[in-house]
Image (cartoon, rainbow, N blue to C red; front, side, top):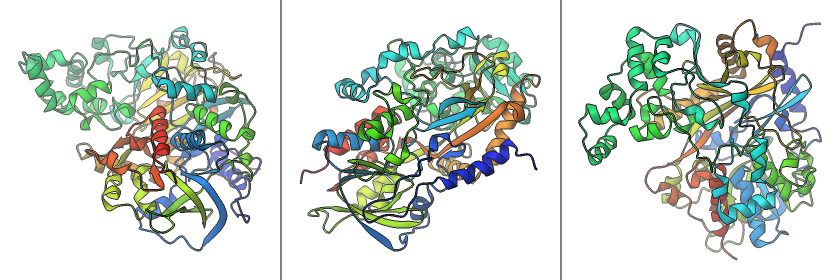
Length: 618
C-alpha cells in the first residue's frame, strides 16, 4: 500500500472528509435541513478564511455582473430580522435586536462561509493526540476596559471576565524561556539564511511580554547580511528619528517640523533625509509595519510610519500598563463569537460562561434548527435583498441567497447588512445612487494568518525566537502563539510539547503604485495560489530559519491552516464616503466594522448597535 504522506492527507483525504460532512442544503417546506452531526469547521486544516467557494457568488456579482442564479425557491419562512453576515458585527446585531425588541423575536443570520465568526476564526490542530487551539484572524479584545457601560454589560451578559486574563495570559512566558524578537534573513533574497537577534522594527510589541532586541543597533547593522554600504545605511535608519529630521532640515520650531511631516512620506524621509537607496534596507523598511498599517510603508507618511512601528523609530510599548494586550482567548476572538452564539442558541454547547466554551465542541447541528428563535445558516451567500414594493411603504424585505448552487428566498421585517460594505450595492440593487457609489469606495486590505502545528518547539527555544520579522519571505512575521491557558485548555509550556506558531502575511502590490491598485493586485495574487504553494513557502521559511539538527519540516510539522482573507482589515473610503454609505435605507440598515471604519471587535459591536437602532419602528 502506498504511504499516505501528510501532504496527501491535507490535500486529499481531509478534503474528501470535509466534503462528506458539508451541511445538507436541500430545504424542507420551511427550513434548511440540519447540519450533519460530525460537521465541525474549526478542526479543518488546509485553505481556510476566504476558503474555496466562499466568495464564488459574491465575485460573480461584483466582477462578472451576474444577477441570475437560477430558479428561486420561495421558502415560507418569515423572520423579524435577517442579518447578512455572521461575523462579530452580525452576531451582535442579532443579539442587540432581541435585547431591544424582545427575546421572542425570530432572527436568521446568513453567512457565505462554512463557519460563523467572520474573521474571528478558531483553528484547532490535533497534534499527536493533543489539541492545540489557535486563531485564524481577529486576535484580541482591544482595550475592553474602555468599552463603557454598554460594553461592560455585554461582557458580563456573555460571561466574559476580564480579570481572568491577569492569570490566564502568561506574561512571564517569554522571559522564562529567554524568547525575544529577532529577524530572519533568507538566502533567496539576502544571500544567506541568518537569524539576527534584533527585530529592526517595533512590530513585536503587540505580543505582550515578548522580549525586545538583545543586541545594539550597531551590532544589528553589522550582523545583517548586507553590503558594507547597506550596513552603514541600515545603522543610519536605526539611529534616525525626529531629531535627525530637525537637524538635517534645520527645523528649529515645532511648527516647521509639523509642516515638514505633513508634506513628506516615510520613503521621502528614508531616501532624502537619510540618503538610503540600498535595496535590502528598503525592503526591510517596506515590510516593517505589516498589519498595523495594512499596507507597505511606501504608502505611509512619516507620522503614520512611526505609529505603525516602522523601522527607524523608537521601540516602545504599544499599550500602557492599564491596557495590556492580553485579552486573548486561545482561539482569538472566535471565543467572543462563540459566546454570542451560545447566548442566542443555548443548545449549541455546554457551559455557563465564555471560559467554559474554550474546550467545548460546538454542535453545529443546533445552529439552524427548527424552533430556535435565532438561527445561523452557513454556506449561504445573499445575492439580493429588496423591499417588497416601494421601499418607503414596504412592509417586508425579500432576501435571496444561494446555498449549494441553488437559490432560496425568505422574508424579513427588517434586514441588517453586516457584511463587507463594498458588496452591498450588488445585493441591494435599488439603493440610492449616491449611497451605492459611496459604498463602492470602501476598502479592505488583504491579510493572511497561517497557523502551523509543531510537534515540539525545541528549535524555536534554541534560537530564542518568540517573534521573528522575515522581510524576505511571504509571511513577513512569525511568532509563538499567545501563551493563554483557560477553561481547561493548557498552552504549551515545555519545548518538548506540541505548539502552534502563527505566521502573518500582508500582501502588497507593486511598490509606489496607488493604494487601490496595490490592494487589487495583492488580492488577485493571493487568491491565485493553491495550498501547495503556501505549504512550499512555509517549508522553505522554517527549514531556512531553524537549525537542521533540531528541526525537519516533514518530521516536525503536523498540520497547517492557511487563513487567507481577500478582504481583511477595514480601511474605509475617502472623505465622508463611509458615513454616506452606511445610511439606513428604510427597512435595511448597515453594520460591520467597515461602516466605522475600523478593525477591532468593539468597533464591530458598536456599528451593530447603531444599525439596530436605525431600524424603523413599524
